[in-house]
Length: 341
Image (tube, rainbow, N blue to C red):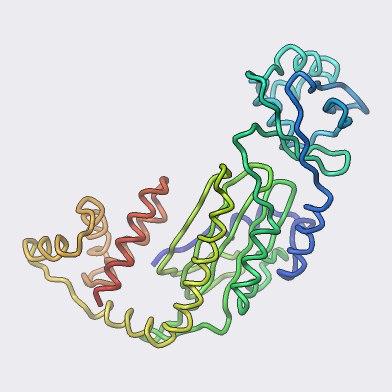
């Protein structure tokens, strides 16, 4: 079993103005933000940075003049290939001159500007496809009917957040508990997204035993994660998010009994100590040998070598794997092992 700290990190980086008490409140905020935002397309020569009102603002052709926030300012620095920290040390007039000499994006393709009132939220090229937070939350509200935020965190954090740069939601089913050898597990999931390119679209589902006041998820099993960058087909990924949540709901309904029995059998299904016999068994499961070898080493540290301790070890390796392909392989191997019992 693993401890998931993603929600805890969100808890400590979100201020009171980014917290929402209910999923309905969060969805309403995202809808209002979308309605007040506008996509504007401008060719690079139409863009210039000027010193105004004691800071820097972007003139976007006939669309008007827009204030920069921290994120859009950083994106403009990236387009100009200058260090954000360096520009921050300059006077506005000097910084504007630096942009005048360096903000010359290659090519003739227009840039995509996302504005909110008189503010500039983000700047992207034609390769970026926006997925609105409201679209993601619509899927969550439709298919995760019985899921609610966890208990309020120690600093008042709610598990439901949205700010200028991204969204994060942490939801659990408080009625989905199952007893497994005297231990209780319940289903939960995280979803996240960014309308301005700060982070990918993603969902992570899991079964957990406990959530502390810091929103650390303790002793999680059956952790499955899906992410997708904001490229041309990102909207198709909403189907993957829907399927992940639907699958969790189906597991909740079916495994209130079945999941208990599976984990109980996995806990008691000892794997042989004979190396050759174990190697042949692993080969029959079609699991990646290198991955299983690492998992076996972790499982043996728990004392009893069972299918459950091996699944638990694979889940740990999945959470430590920095690449999506590695996480997928470990998650798939863990799921395949559980199917054998």
